[in-house]
Image 1 (cartoon, rainbow, N blue to C red):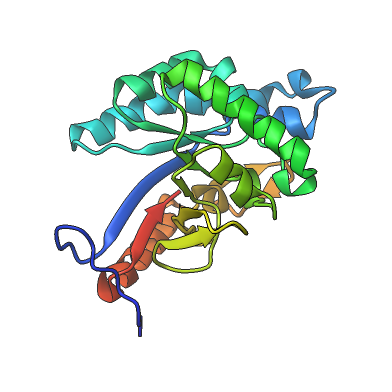
Image 2: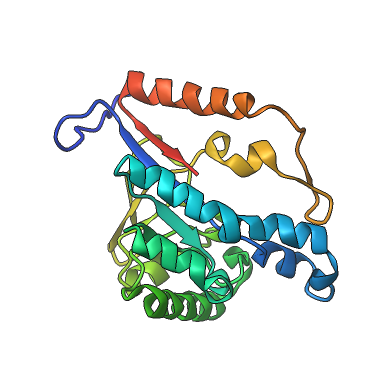
Length: 231
C-alpha cells in the first residue's frame, strides 16, 4: 500500500515521535483578552498542564529513558518558567509554537516574522539554545512560514498533514525543511476538550476511546512502516 516506505536508521520497522503542545492559558487570553481573569474555572483547568501535569509527564517518560518535544507558546514560557525549567532539566526539546497561540496565517509576512523572531529569542533565553523545531499554533501554517523558518535556521516543522512519513518542504529559493506530519486523530485535544469558554464541546468519553484511536494509528504505522507521532 505504501510505495515509499522509509529505511529508518538502524533498522526499526516504524518511527515514533512523542510531542506535546503546551498551550496552557494562552488560548484563554487570546479568546477573551478583556476578561480572561474572570473565567477562573477555565483558567485553573488550563494551568493544570504547566503547574501539575508537566512534572508528571516528564517523570514518566524519563523513567523509560524517552525524551519528548514540547511545543510551547513563548508567552507560556514567560508565564510558567518552572514548567520550562523542568522540561530542560529532563533533557526534553522545547519547540517553537508562536507567541500566544495566534494564527500566523492571518498575518502579513512582516508580522509573522516579527512574532517568530521574538518567540525564538524568548526560547533561547529560557533554554540556552535557539529552537530547531516549529509547530504552527492551530496548525495555521501560512504561505510565508517556510521562508521565515528557513531564514531563521530551523531544521524541521511539524504542522502539516501531507504524508504519513516525514517529507521535505522547500521555499522558493530551494532551501529545505523536514516536515514531521500530524494527524488530527493523534491530538488529545480532539478527544478530551470540553469547555464552554473556548467553544469546544467534545463528547465526554472514557480514556479508552482515545487509546483505541492512538493504538489503531500505531498498528497502521507498524504494518506499513510509516511514522506515528503523538500530539
